Amino acid sequence: MEKLPKVNQKEKIVKGAKLNFMVMALMLPLGLISIGPFVLMSGAQPYLLEVKSFLNTELFVFLLLGILVHEAIHGFTWMILLRKGFKHIKFGFNTHSFSPYTHCTLPMKVWQYRLGGLMPGLLMGIFPIVISFFLDSIWLNFVGYLFLWAAGGDIISLIMIRRLNKNTMVIDHPDEMGYIILENREIN
Image (cartoon, one colour):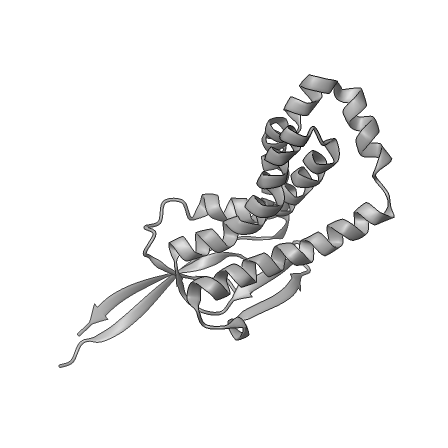
């Protein structure tokens, strides 16, 4: 009898309130690392006064547009890595966790999933934070931190997937924050 491939699936997700709690817990140490050096150099009061000076409608609109760019970076990264076009990338809003999302409908290797998950936080969070020290820019530092916060779910997902082999096949979860591990097995 011919052996037919069978795919077992193992779901790894974090839901709404638990995800939000995990992101909040993660942001304290990330804030100490990213904002802490500025506060040590200039003091908390000057940092807070400057942040307060640009807390306005323009910043709010900038952050909303930034979240859309964040999601687009996920989509473009996966589109480039998988070379299958944009038709397999879906955008939406999860009402349980009150967050936008990008979903790739195609299976991919763990390294591709990781890179797609990493890129927005790297480009919009970590890079601006690093550059802010060279430019002595509290605004860039604070905005980088906010975009790193926006990547909190991505960071949690990267932590969850850290032990998987880079060539294991996964698929982005269609409804929740997380992924599904695809395990190939042969049956008789």
